[in-house]
Amino acid sequence: MNRLMLINGPNLNLLGTREPGIYGSHTLQDVVAEVKHVTDDFGYDLEDYQSNHEGAMVDKIQEAGRTCSGIILNAAAYTHTSIAIRDAIASIPVPVIEVHISNIHTREEFRHHSMLASVCKAQIVGLGIKGYRYAALALLEK
Ligand code: DHK
Image (cartoon, rainbow, N blue to C red; front, side, top):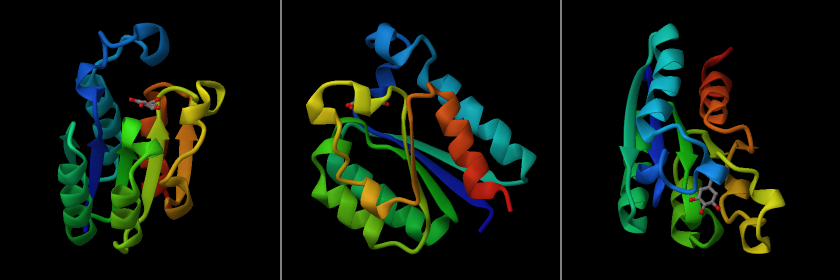
């Protein structure tokens, strides 16, 4: 399957205006464009999806497990709370790379723990929206 899935979780639809000191001034559209450059270069399709709803994200992860060869996931606040998203990742056969724009490990203590990291292939944090590009490269480079 020559297809990657990009999933962004709650409040990431507000990128660009949301706490720019932490998340920068790039928009979600810029994030998608960043990843699409890479998938285009490799001849892959990209599906992008954003939701503020945990169950909808679970549905999308399950779907991507059937239709894609890899997932780039910023589950945003659900990273720190969601056993349901963790279990969805563990239930599918495709690699998931966890991305965070900010460095969650240098922020509030409640952001230090990821419920998802132990079932993901890798975690990329603190590199701004470039982290999404690096995740795509990691999934596609041989
Ligand atoms: C985005 C969020 O919305 C937060 O809830 C996470 C993450 C960090 C990010 O850095 O991309 O704690």
